Length: 228
Image (cartoon, rainbow, N blue to C red):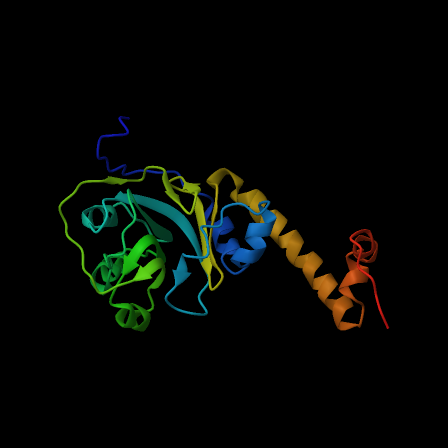
């Protein structure tokens, strides 16, 4: 496929649905640790709502700055459980996505949006319950004029996202898990949750983190002196 040719890829591979469902409630912090601290899209991609945790398959969109033509083109290739992931070819702060596009996506069962530019109509988006993680909030609207591509590799925050990768998102941000690693990520995340639960019990019983994590010698090696 010619990378310079605007393209809409209709069919992508997705991870196992049960695996995606199980990753959703775990939380991005744990998933990020489970995949060796990879996949975080950065602190600039933030939720417009609070208290929402989702996971889904990435339908990716590459757009021209300030132009949402290809978001409209992407709607018809989305399936229930997907998350739309939009990247731009250059930085832009326009609010190119609002409640009308969200209504169209929600009708198709799309769980949310991750977008490396701006959104608008945020009160309406919150009221309708459509989850969004964006770089900006802006009332400056879009145009629909320049072609781009759907379901091609995109980059947000230095992370390459392939179509069908698993996106996890919550109040802490967004983490992308390569599709082929989804099952392994889930297993490692569940192990981490069990380990954290045991550590939490020890902390609640009065043990100190410096002892649980073996940090006393490290403090000494770093020259830390205790003074009474």
